[in-house]
Length: 212
Image (cartoon, rainbow, N blue to C red):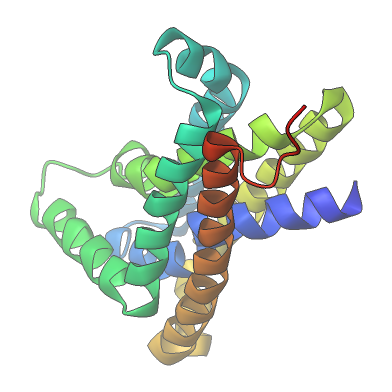
């Protein structure tokens, strides 16, 4: 159970990327009061939780309704996560998030950023949705399902604290530390993504299975 929790926690932490989201959130809410920043951070994480838990609980039924095999989803999800990892290592993801944040900030009519772009697509984006569905499909029984959901809750709780403390943290650590952490997380995510693809290919082509 401990190994499952650690694996799920690392996967979701890397994909959701609290260290990368915090500076973006700080920039988006620069003109807001501390109370407004706190309420928007809490609201963003709650909305992201609802979205991800929904896909975690009903994602398998969605795949069945679309006649998509789990191994096919593993391969597709692995490639998607690998692309995110590539962007993290070469800072493409941070650049894209910054550009999206600039567009939101440039529109004076948009004040509450908790739903867009924070909750979705930054926190509950395609990569996070794919990751939680893959983790839930690998969980066996109620106990392991609760472990995965617990890991998700822990990551989103840490994300909420990171968003609330985004301003002070950026003043302490700066952009360089955030860039180093993002690259390190990207390398870990690339390895996890490769494993998903390998498992999907093994299942699709029955590699390593003993014929009966």
